[in-house]
Length: 269
Image (cartoon, rainbow, N blue to C red):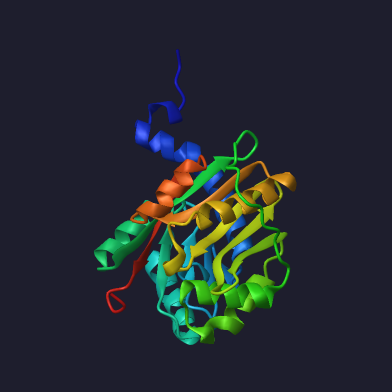
């Protein structure tokens, strides 16, 4: 029996190739769910920059084609100038879509790999959601941003930039906030529904109110809302070392789809 070229590849290479369509789709919906203020392309590289917010997802170079490895050093230098103009440290986001030749070049130049994350997906169709108190989403961006900054303990100076990002989300989004009569906002979640995909962009619970079931409660509300709007698959991103979050998401049926990390230059490291 004749074999195709793909059949003769090592199993780990075949596995990576098989997941590329899913990676491309989830990366694309991720860009729409967390929009940068400036997006430029250099070949298949997406250069994302946002002057007002330091989020790495909003300020990074994202290679989107494993076969795109032309003029790597020249393109890295050009991208570096763009980041300098924005006053941002340059970082490169490595997903299975990044060229191995680019990653080898970064290693050779002394770049540092950091902040590994897992992209997870869950089937919403047959998912049995916990019997938790339901919360309806708000459409008040200002209220959500204030609550999010407070729950995360983030610098209030980020409010205008975060409000701009949330307001810039084009697909339908649900802004979920749980408030306590005495403490005010205690948990927040942002869910973005992009056709049949629902992205959980954050699940935050105030430090002093954790281990009370609030994360289960607010995540259940977001997933129920997304499923009622005909979403079939939920996705999210979580740090590899965030064991409490990984345990929570596993309880909801989330499983690993792929991983990504970032690289920073020697000067930034």
